Image (cartoon, rainbow, N blue to C red; front, side, top):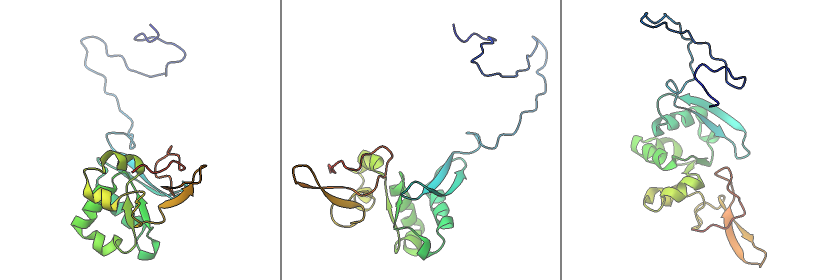
Length: 179
């Protein structure tokens, strides 16, 4: 009832359409070029600092493949000194597999950087993925990444471990780790 074809309600957006009369050829309409559309670009990939500041961004057309992610990271961090200690991304397992397969792990990333998956994605697929569980864990309790896990004390004086960084927006950092 609120949206009727051809209705001119004040809250509806104004769309200029050329009506095609019945039994006549369609008018030749020049469509404006839109370079940022779903058909043209798949996503915008951003690299953010732990504080949330955007360091770099790029557009990926057609897919967000691990190869494209690695190329983007290599362009932003061209030298060993510039590379971060951790790269947290939802596809960290796939990015790590690709880096190992194409040789960039040994050549570029192994000395400096660890790829970790964000906590939401880790919970969803770590149990059946050994590589993810062992190398992409955002909060390993085996001491392999002491910068990612910190000890805290609850109100009863018991020590528990919690994530040092929020790898996923909306995750409360003071929740104890349950795995």
